Structure formats: structure tokens, C-alpha cells
Length: 323
Image (cartoon, rainbow, N blue to C red; front, side, top):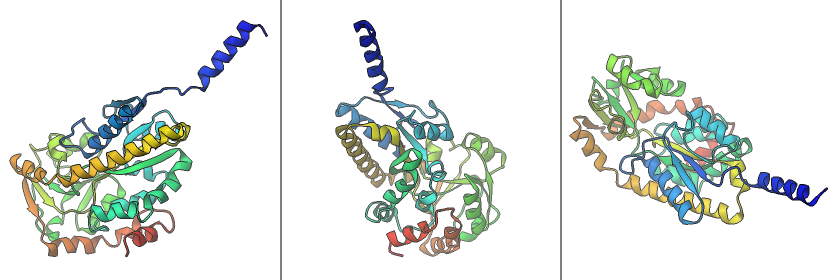
């Protein structure tokens, strides 16, 4: 082999050995709004931390890199480094994560955090997802715990849910509504405004900021602060990418995730004003009494056995919160 051929072959091999892109792509799931979106607070803090410590990072607006399923595939294949995604997507890889969204299972978000860290549930989730190419860096709170938004009928008591048709994300939410005496219909997020305005759905379950961010205040009239569960999204990373990093880079990513976690929780701790924002937008805010909230909690108990989780996962969640 001539020197030139050897040099060329060596150069090509070296090029192929380099990462496809030095840029860490961060796929967002909400508008870039530090005032309203807890997941954007997480994503932006994470990206800025990486950049401050010598790693290139770029944010990509919602759905610019594909819908939920597409982004999950890209992450699992190592084509996308970071995605702010819904927990339902990760649940297709390992259903343990569904436990974090069970209605009225946790006393509050602090109890869920303790279950994830001290109780070892985040580690258990990753034991199921990382062999399939996806690392869950964190469970991220969109905003305050989810409540009940309605267009026509205010929900002041458990019995007020009877015959209200709610927009459902999936079959589990439909089961949830049925146990509460109401009905559910699955509607994609892009179709929600039309569904609410035409009466296909009478409301939805979401954290308080949602109608403000997505422009639903013209037809949403009531918000019941039911505090049914933490409004959870997830920050996922490509496991292939994560393992390809140097020890120093991996430590930076881990520290960035910790900084983002802390920023997200600080954001949530200061979100009480959002209820005033709802009122200012013309939405009546209804506080459930402890007695009525207990009725929702009691009705929700059978749902825990219906959640599709691996064998032993529900017991693990119960142990993690001391039940």
C-alpha cells in the first residue's frame, strides 16, 4: 500500500470513528416558555449546563424532530440524544414508569421524588428501558398536579363528575373516568380545541397552566384543583449515545440532569400564582374539600391493579412509599 493510500484509509477510518454529531440535540415538547412550562425549564437548564461545561447543545422546537413515537424510535436508535417525552412512550419499553402517574397513589410530588430516588424506582425503570436503548434521566413535572378542566359543568363534588364526557389520553384514562362515574373519549392533542368547542368532549385532565399556554381559555370555564397526580413528563436520553461518552462527558450529563431536576422542582415550588392567572383569564378555580378528594381517592383504588406494569412493579411502588 502506498503512503497516500495508507494515509487516506487511515483518515477515513478516523472519521468514521468520530461521533456522527458533536451537537447534543434536545427535542422540546412544549413552547420555549420559562414562565409556564416546567419541562422547558428542565430542558433549557440542562442544555445551558452542557454548554457551560464544554459540550455543544441545541434545542429543537416541539415536533420539529417528529411526533412522540418518532422521537422515541430516534432515541432508541441513537439518532437523537435527548427528548422531552411523554411517560406513555417509555411505558411501551417498560411499564414500571406508569406507576408514577397513578391517580391519588402519592400524597404529593415529594413522596413521588423519594420513591424515585431513595426508593430506587428510577433505577428500576432504567433496568427495563436501557436494554432497549433508552435511558430515563429524570421524571419532569410540567406544572402543579393535574386537575379537572371543564367547559360547561363545574365539578365541585365527586358526584358532579357523573355523565361528564372527558377527553382521554388512553384506555387507562377512560377506565379512570369510568370509575369516577363519567365517560371518556380518546382525542389527539391537536384535535382537543375542536372537541371541546363542538361538545365531543366536555373537559380534560391537565396541570393548571395548559389552557393558558395552548390558548384554550376561550372555551374552558372551570378548573377543579383535584390534585389527582403529578403532571409527569420524562427526559430521555439515547443509551448508545450516553455510553459512548467519555467519563468526563458522562459526569457532565449526569450533573446537568441534576441541575435541571433542581431547577424544575424550584419552578414547581413557585407555581401557586398560576391559579390567579387562571382566574384572570376568566376560569373559575374550584378547591375540593378533603372529604370530596377522599371520594376520588377511594374510587381510584381499583385502578392500580389495572395499570399494565411488569410483575412485582406495583408492590415495588408500594414499598417505595411505605404502603
